[in-house]
Image (cartoon, rainbow, N blue to C red):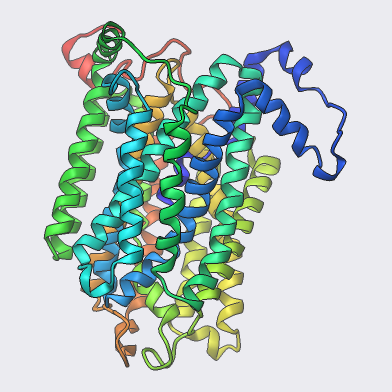
Length: 553
């Protein structure tokens, strides 16, 4: 699963927002005459949103969420592995680098905290979005325009990091803006979220479709050169005041700081996450040892679990520990899998030899469509199940389906007469659907663990932990590949590098089953939709820290 999916909207939230609106929703949300039948109601939908929140926010969300988070993220994300391959980066080191460039998504809590506490020139969001967009656009331009012999790998990784930093920053700040609008007009909450996520998924599909054409027909660097333009375009709506921020006075800023200082636990955890991410980034950039990077990631994860465990309420802390454990144990072997599938006949004679178009556009688009089917079927058939039952079934099913990858890596599918292209699409079909069934209950339970008044902060913290788990899985997976001598880098005749890839896949498939046993202790035995906390409870109510010091809530 992608580290940024943790922030995706879940339909139960829509229902909560709509219910909060009460009878007003029925009056304002009833069916309207469709004056543009050819658009299937889209024109009326956008017209209503324009009247509710204004064209400025719609335009801003189009650029930030649809174009950047949707199109650019997948357009360039599909090319990243090909860029590393052009540098002949070995598979384990590629995973370490990808772990680093995924860390900005774990920085969302500190980004939100700093922007709320320290406005620049009286504005909380615009200056930070402008700074992130300037550096992000330059980073896209650097990868796309600077020749490979003039852009060493450390600068390449730094550029990827700054690109992710732009996406993460503008995403969390725009989320904060449309969350304000939802609070002001809750009856339009479902419409706003539908606009954001439909456009994001549409942009993502377009990005994946075009990526294979551009990478295969031109080069893996061209998507970055093209993306520098939309990355810079973000400056236009933000600079033109489309955020519609009110300038705060020094006194108001000081009062805002006092309120955040009262949330000591959340502030400390945000800062602690920043320190962990900074340390992991520094180690990853300076050490080429997979042993060191894996050890650092594990220690960082343990530090996070420890402090979240003592500062948050026991229920939230246990779910966070289980979620981080599940993500961390899902070891990544994606670096080696990429070389296995895309190596040419000269590099790996026995391999599948997938073209760039098939590997990025066909597999990516097919996977997205099947994920959407997973979302629809979950909502229709599984949304009433108990958390424990659903987690047990889906975790075991995902592990069993992942075991099928061994057939591909040992080439048994070819011996049985199953073409590689058909095999990868067939197994991917089931893996993506069941993967959504496994993931969506976590989104639901995560939402119910966010106390009233601190939803954004707690959600960002828990989501940040999940994204940190992806880096742990990537770094430890890199160590596993190295220990098994799976070190492909695109060299000629590197078949021997894939001999033990099936063993790495076997270990990575079985390890997550440990969480099936643990969930009976860490996950509450209730149905989805049932309340998990008292409405007035704080995120730190009954925490070990408060129990030890005798602090009352």
